[in-house]
Length: 133
Image (cartoon, rainbow, N blue to C red):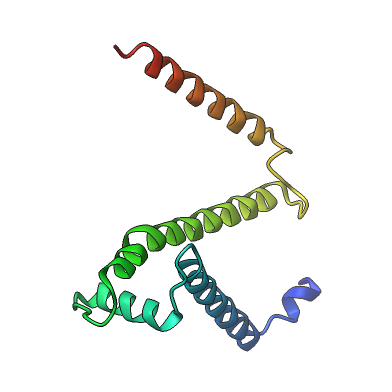
């Protein structure tokens, strides 16, 4: 017998939830690009991204603003989205592997191994900088 939650699954409901999630992702990416020491309006961001994808040139937006968006904020926001997605996949893998919805990295000692790796990286980087002459 199937679980009750599986029986209530509806493809239309999933499509609506996925659409809302994608819209929230796009909005959060635009907000991440927009906010900073220099606030850039959403309309300029969309123009810059469209021109960046298609290879067109933009004359009405200052080149400093284009550089801020394409060289600084866009890579940072894309990397943040990829890291968040990776953490979500890792969490789902833990929960699926352990068959426990409360599973976390501390359960298998993954956090301890990660902290050991961070300490070793910092230590060896310090040794490299100290003795590289």
